[in-house]
Image (cartoon, rainbow, N blue to C red; front, side):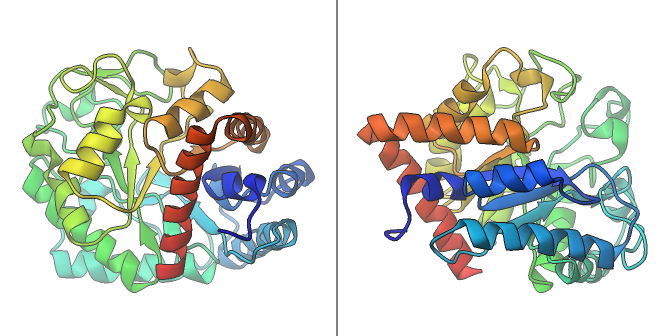
Length: 338
């Protein structure tokens, strides 16, 4: 990190998106000009493993050329299964939903997840924004739970069942050399609206010591290095701030209560309707001020705007610069350990 300038350190704490079918010239220009060090394959692709690898390699070359320090990027996607499987086609097995995966024996799920992880690794992907560790309270409520249950993204209907299956999924990914990301802390299983398309999405049930935190707690105790925070409000935890702006949720709960030392990554903060009241720069500043580690924005142009805001603030504010340094160090240490 000592060899990095401020722009490069900011680039390490951002993850930008490009289409899974391939980046545009503008995407690559945004990545290069802002030294962005991590990327996310968004949308859907049916072009198969080899075409995906070609798309990934092209972006990796762009990242390598834009950095003075040689640091490998995190390359992520959403490969949960069911309706949330970004990559399909030759070389990518069709994945059933978590609702189906949760009926399998943990050993079987781990073995299947290892296969799916090996496919991702073969395409140059080293982070999977999965498993979903949210607990939907019942089958009857699932259709009303817009972000998770409605799509069959839940492994089960009790924290223990979700923990068992999400751990097996994570173990399989890790066996393939792919970092799993448990999400969406502190849980989206009890809301009715979806933060992607609605605003003021609020969980009125979850508490700081809730039983539904068990899948996240177990994943952290097992050594998982990535946790994604949701974009919802949690009225019984921090009624004033959505989770990615909440020091109570990220610093107090994740860091202090659960002892998490890894990467706290945001859900997408650029396209989600929940974030619409805030400008792009404000979103970025508030996330890191609250203790976040890596900000996910699926639009490279908007990520560039956020990068500029972070550099501007850090160049004038030593305390904020220290927060960026802390986040960048966590990212670099996690990359080195991996």
